[in-house]
Image (cartoon, rainbow, N blue to C red; front, side):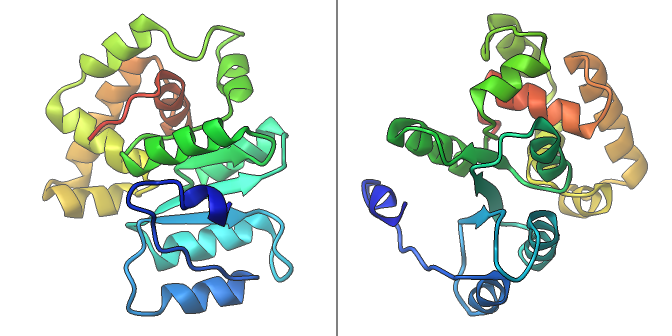
Length: 198
């Protein structure tokens, strides 16, 4: 993975940790991180525990799961708990690079088989999906972008300088437009469309 990331131009600085404690220590340093790649199988914690710990420590950093796990329920739980993406270890090099580029650009990535199955086997990208995202207002797109980062309503309201009731109103409009029942379904929709919101 480190070798693969060096193919970016310019190549990023990559710091590694063997476990959750090591990752927390790295994130406590003065460095600013653009992306955290988290393996679900750390020796000192379970995957969701580590995700919640790191999400709380670096709420503004893109946090992505890198795992060999294929269970849709596990993937759903990761997204529900603030991950901006889920990349399979079985992905090809090109898929890994495309996924990371999309996430760094503000999008969210899920395995193709998950997003396809989620919508009754429809293709990952449909013109209608892109059109629906484009039909959102600028404020709705901003709220959705924060949603993809796993931000709670309170944080969104603070960052946008609007009330939590206004955030809820925007979310309601987003859900209605996208045909989503909740936050996680909206994230799945955006992942399937594959369009960065920034």
